Image (cartoon, rainbow, N blue to C red; front, side, top):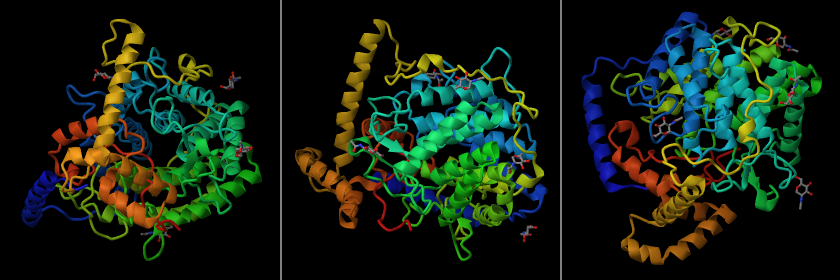
Length: 552
Ligand SMILES: *[C@@H]1O[C@H](CO)[C@@H](O)[C@H](O)[C@H]1NC(C)=O
Ligand SMILES: *[C@@H]1O[C@H](CO)[C@@H](O)[C@H](O)[C@H]1NC(C)=O
Ligand SMILES: *[C@@H]1O[C@H](CO)[C@@H](O)[C@H](O)[C@H]1NC(C)=O
Ligand SMILES: *[C@@H]1O[C@H](CO)[C@@H](O)[C@H](O)[C@H]1NC(C)=O
Ligand SMILES: *[C@@H]1O[C@H](CO)[C@@H](O)[C@H](O)[C@H]1NC(C)=O
């Protein structure tokens, strides 16, 4: 949705940055030599620095482990994982303290990454990304927290335990729901990334601890994914489906992180079991993931479902980071994949680095790696993805992940996460003073959500380019709603185009309820040129309005 004042501001910023580019002596593109450790670490260091230029959690008044609006909580967890990787690859300890603080600050009351402040939006996948970050910390022997603090392995186990308790056999024969809390939009959706995080975490915990129970859960998750056809006979990992339809209304988009998560878990399972069945699954998934590589030689990583149509939302802008991270990781657990994936990672890394010529410092990375040119689409995800794919080039120089029996030092707790087990209603956020007991607090919260929902619906269907006044448009609300659901059901191009006009780029399934208030906050913060492209909204893991046929 084009908001006129924002575009005016954007034009001013664009003019200013043109001026800057013209006079700036900087802006020499990175020329990455993927076979040189020095080249990789030097460039990754600058990419990390630029990624952290968005982070305020280490600044006075900032909250450790949070990225500023509009970034979701989960992406900060993903970024902490990226920085654990950064240390593993480069041995640069510069950010270790920042990472430890961030990872520990967000653990929540019961040390399982369910902090009260996030209950408005936290899904299983969001929690999963924090779980995967601490799992990496355990596997790489990232410096352990002080003894009186929760430990990496125990935290990963807590995430696993709370999720296993949420396995839902009532609908679709099993699987995790997207959302944890029943009041959140998306509670009726079962999505692949939630299963992918749980699957990969289970497989890795089995490998690390040797405890077969984790592997049993990984097997169960895999079987369910195949059973509902989220992993189909072409080894495509599709996005998810709804409980109301017994998970048969599959949303067919392929996102790189869904495939990546299953590739990662399959490699860990192969290493754990040494069973050729898992090798076969892994190899097929890797083969299937070639869909994410395009360009003249079909070897440059691309978020195919959204890049070509310029529709990658804030979350999706980071997905290539995880596919990069996980394709590199599997070369340790399944060394036979090294020769298969490395040419893709090297080519992608060179292409990613080449386009990082943006921003005032002349080296911010854009989103697309295939064009050879900076596409003026910057952010945390773009920096993270470029950094991870760059780092992946030197995976051979680095040791394998440790386990309990091969040098791992992180302390576990098989029963961690107990207090949150099976809970599907949130505790109130900490910023809400609860004086008259939880009941009153919950009532206030519910009222706030209902209000936000009404406001959100109003905003979603408000067409700013319309000649009608907002009130007139509200009267036409019913029609829009009907059209909206019809379009979703039909998934047709014409209907989708209609919706795009009506709702702009930011149709937001997960946060329809709160989008208006978030929008209001985000609007006040519109003062950096990175945020002027209408990408300021909180987004979701799934956009459904994508040009049909963009995924092969
Ligand atoms: C890097 O090394 C690989 C394997 O030895 C080789 O195939 C590739 O051509 C090299 N790439 C560059 C850019 O030198
Ligand atoms: C729902 O789907 C599962 C397979 O995913 C099937 O076993 C089950 O019978 C279906 N339930 C209904 C009510 O159709
Ligand atoms: C399992 O991982 C270890 C550590 O990276 C590796 O040495 C071993 O070869 C792997 N096993 C298999 C079956 O690939
Ligand atoms: C293995 O993991 C399961 C699931 O978390 C746990 O209940 C069990 O106690 C663990 N077993 C051992 C020996 O740690
Ligand atoms: C939760 O939000 C409050 C108020 O903004 C803040 O003071 C606190 O540090 C936050 N806690 C976490 C874990 O982010």
